[in-house]
Image (cartoon, rainbow, N blue to C red):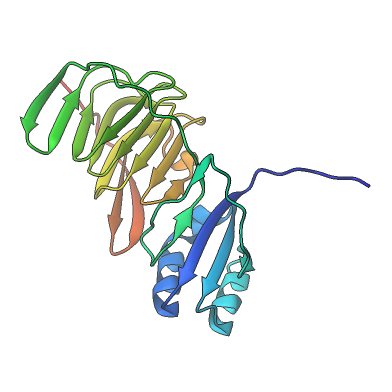
Length: 206
């Protein structure tokens, strides 16, 4: 007997409206080419045909195992979840910061390996995110230096430049790093579509 063990990226969708599901994947399916899509709920022949036509790998009504080290998070479609590695939260060291207004934090120190920074509002980070560092943010995010760690952003937009080893998740969709390398990019959610726009003009943060 020959065996292989694979690490698989899984995106789970509980479908309640086929038009909403198809509209979302029409705009974003490019981000799911390397995922296994687990669908349940209202899985019609139209949806099955659509997923086959897009050449997306999927399973229907499969009860996926979930370990204690995993967590699922809500996504733009009804009850969509994505499995992601849970990084233990460390006690956040005191950061020199300046409050511009109630919803914005400005931090000028790097996010170190093993550190998880959780932000309820918006964040302007004037430094880098090291490999193994994590930012989990509900608001908008701007990072002026390279990101090598993990980003979980649920705001209207984020601006960043990522290295190949970074893990960037925007509204629970993992963004392909090839779109974020070598230059500053704006990532935003418009009409349920994730759009990535290079910031072509040289940006001064001074």
